[in-house]
Image (tube, rainbow, N blue to C red; front, side):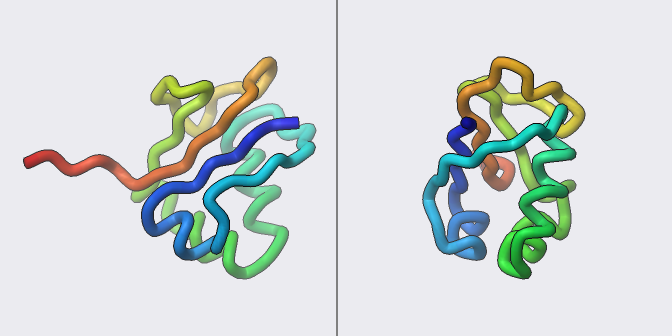
Amino acid sequence: MIDVLYFAWVRERIGLPRERIETAAPTVAALVEELKAREERYALAFADLASLRVALDQELSSFDAPLAGVREVAFFPPMTGG
């Protein structure tokens, strides 16, 4: 089981702040494809991966990163400074 967290507009589009899912996805990108296939709201949230960032166990990561041993995946838009 993996905890999946959604922040900012990703959470708004999906309608959940977090969920626990069971997945056999080997990478973040494969997990995203599984989520997109669930429902249209997930497909909309993950339509443009260039506008998303991902963290694995609270460490900024990439979409081709492996999920083996990961307990938490978080999706969020890029942070803006100011």
